[in-house]
Image (tube, rainbow, N blue to C red; front, side, top):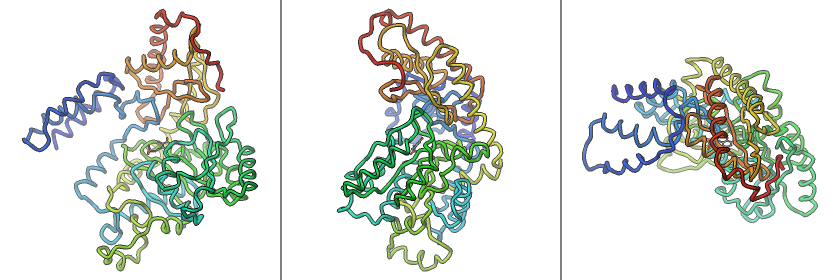
Length: 471
Ligand SMILES: *Cc1c(COP(=O)(O)O)cnc(C)c1O
């Protein structure tokens, strides 16, 4: 315990000095020098191996300079909760054996349902992440519509091209890969266009198809765009569609009273997914699904087994998590949400989220004054941007630019392609990220652009003609 704790402290203390991203991954293969199960080793030797082969290579997700994808950071109180969850090995799948851990999961879900604005009789589940949470919701949507295999080819799903791939994956894993997918048009901020949605639904009805599911984003991973959820809810209600909101990234911004109008309509959805390992800064391993119609969730997931008969008969106190999700035995996830909320209260979470919104605004403003072109919207905390080189392909230049920043490693940013345009992304959501890290990102970017522009290949005439703007 002392060795593990000592290492954890040392790592956290070192974060300000070490790079966020280490391009050199050669130490990973050294893991294979320790044959599994043959000899016993000293804990110090093993922790040293973990440090060199696991923690150092690639990205340090706990780092203040994690500005890629959708960060979070991993708050310390949750890691202590995980420690206690593992030591006690509390059973969180069935109420009969783990009444307290299941009650705690209920409390956490009720807190989130209130945050979303769902009615009290909504139900939900704590899953391993947003992807499994999405799968849980999609299967409920399938059952609620009474769709059977023979119906799938006529059932229609509506989403913009910016909906997270995990929702399409969930539809396929749910056996519904043959459903009809419609690309709904987006506005110039990459938000769903409700006129386009209405038209597509009307066309599909005229064709004799069965409009089934509309997907909205409360923050896309590409650009942080928030779809007009309230207007989508109007259409979903009128057309009797299941309305699923992917709020994995943006959902917890509902903690900010001033941000709630931007998320209006989320409370009218049929299901919603939030990722506490993003917007609540938890260590990886928790995604939440909430479903308005609790029967739909149970119809989709409840099973009976004779070897669990005593758990069912003694239940009485309410459904078990196993009856509303694909999992039976699972990690006691509620504790890692519950402990920090009770230790700290909501206020520090609010302060952190507010700070990230400010940092994103600051980044967008400053990166523009450095001469970068910035993306059109700033709905949350993702800023897209790119450098327009004097000559040559802008897409190729910006791809080289993001790779150059990875070789630098002091901060870690990622990239995306929107409408055929390669854009860098800065995502401020790690709780350790503050103003000094954002300023460091400017230094990294300026130096990387200078190094690239000094290379002769960017002075050659354009090889390809990707046109500027966002397509
Ligand atoms: C991260 C993310 C997901 C997927 O969740 P995981 O926790 O990675 O499985 C879905 N949607 C959005 C918008 C996300 O940011």
